[in-house]
Image: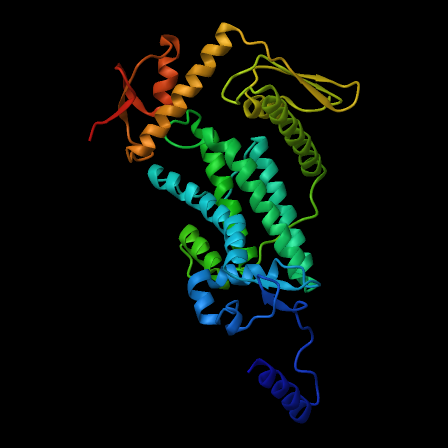
Length: 378
C-alpha cells in the first residue's frame, strides 16, 4: 500500500505540477524482526501495526525508529521496544510524576520569571539550552537520529543527576522554602521546554505532559523553544559539573572497592589535580559521596583519596541514615501519603539525632518498641 501511494505521488506531481512531490525522504536500511530475520507470519516474528500500537504504544514505536541509526538495519519486536520504553520513556515519565506528585501537595504555581542561584538549577538550565540548540540544529538538517540521541542523554542527566541531587531540596520535609521554590520552578521549566522539543517525536506523551503542566490546549500549538549560544559562565559551569561528576563516579568506585556503603559517612576526600571548584560544587561532592570535608589539591594527576577511618561519631551518623532509610521504606509499605505525618515505633535511635530523624520521615513522635512499625494517625 505504501509503495502504491508513493508511486501515485510521483506520478501525480509529475503530470499535474511537473515538480518533485517531496524534498527529503527519511528512512533506514531495512526493518527486520528482532531475531535478525525478515518479518514473516510463518516465522512468528512479524507484528501487525495495530497490534504493535496497542501493545507497545505509538510513541514508543516512533522513538524506536527515530533513535535508530538510519545507516543500519532496524531490529523491531516486543523485546527491543520494551528496552526503548524502559531506558527512556519510563525515566522521563517517572521524572514528571515525581514533580507533579510533590507540587500537588503544596499548592505550588509557576512564576513567570524566577532566578535561582543554586548551581544544580543553573547547570540543568544550561544543559537544557544546550539540548534545545542541538535538537534544533539537527532537525534543520533532517537528522532525527542525532536530535533524539541528544534528548535521551539530557533526560538521563536530568533524572540521574539533577533529580537525585535535588531530592532533599523538595517535599514536605525540606527546610529552605526559597530553595524549594527555585527547584520546583526549574523542574517546571525543564519539563515544559522538553515536552515542546519532544513534540515531533512523541506527540502524545509530549502533549500530555505539556497540557497538564501549562493548562494550554495542546503542545502542537505551542512555539518552538528558543536557545542561545551559551554564556561563558554557563560553559564554565558545564565543565566544572563534569569534573564534579567524575569525582563522584570515582568516589563511588572507591567506596565499592573498600566495601563501604554510601550511607556510612566518611570524614574527608582528597581530590588531586583539581583546584577551581567553588564551595557550592564542593558541597555537591560532599553530599553525593557522604563525606564531611572535601580537600582540593592542584598538583598531580586527577585522582582521589578517601579517608576510610571510621570514628564512633561517623558510625553513629551511618546508623541514623540507615534508620531513616528503614522508616521511609516502612512508610511506603504502609501506603502513607508523601505529606502524611505518622508516629514511629522502633527499637532504638541516637537521642541527639531524634529531631533530625522526625523531620526527615515526617514523624510526630518516636516510640520505643521491639520492632519498627508505622502508626498512621488518620
